[in-house]
Image 1 (cartoon, rainbow, N blue to C red):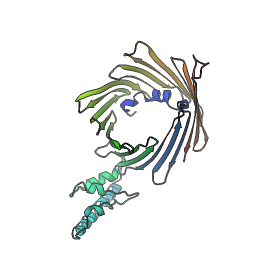
Image 2: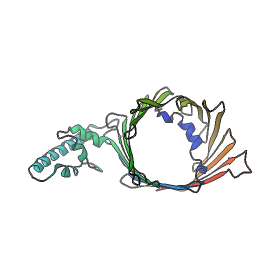
Image 3: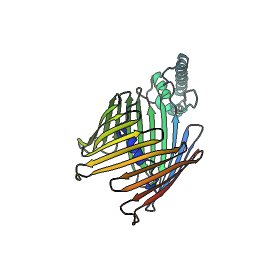
Image 4: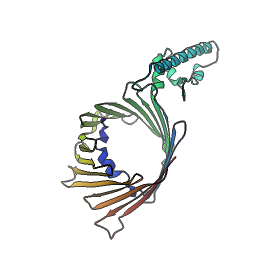
Length: 361
């Protein structure tokens, strides 16, 4: 089993306790579609129990990585290198011709250079990095998986995200996220780095405009045993902003984890068990050392009724119970129903119900 990220050490239990409970919103509609050229669109809208609505539009384009297979054939590798070499020769010739023509800028023509192959995409920006660029740079860009995501929500926040996988080394993923609010002209920029190997998973998140600040976490694993830690650092203040730690064990049918967050003041112990192909069960106990000696407890279970539907139920130590039901009405259409009930206040209007409809095409 692969080593998870720090926040996913207790993912199985957290998903069982929190996902697919539709009472959180009064109504949710989500539409997903994909185009033949690897563009995925998603539109989501929610209505809260306080009559507040929110929505989000997202478009994601993914370019599959090329040349990263575990057993690449020599012919395909030679073909890729030949394509890049030929492209470099063509660009060198075009550059010489441009220099002989006064009044013509190099960048205008460079932006139209593309690497041959299926779904070619512009690489002119990479050539501009250096006048004497190495051929390996073009090969690296073409063989890396690139993902572009654009989103716009009802808060009028425009978010752009660029992801590149295996750009520097195998297992390295880089993300650049930019958020812009036109109404206030405020913006934020973040750089995220991920490094994943068979027994290690490390991440670094940098807020480039605020602080700047850095949040780093790492997890090591061996034979199912996991140990991880995270820390935040403010560069301007030269001080730690927080730290956490976690240990866990993961097996194919069950997992357990103990986490200490909020500067090691909030402790949580979680357990997940996949009983069989139909039944899943889990529990989580939480203790905040700053607020007293009371321990919060949540227990949840999921039962798959048939291949197209499932039901979930959970209850906590305060007597609040929740139930959920999800079914596939027809190919591409999912219906979710949920409710939350305070068993200690059945005569009061504290209960919540919600419905969710998802369309996929």
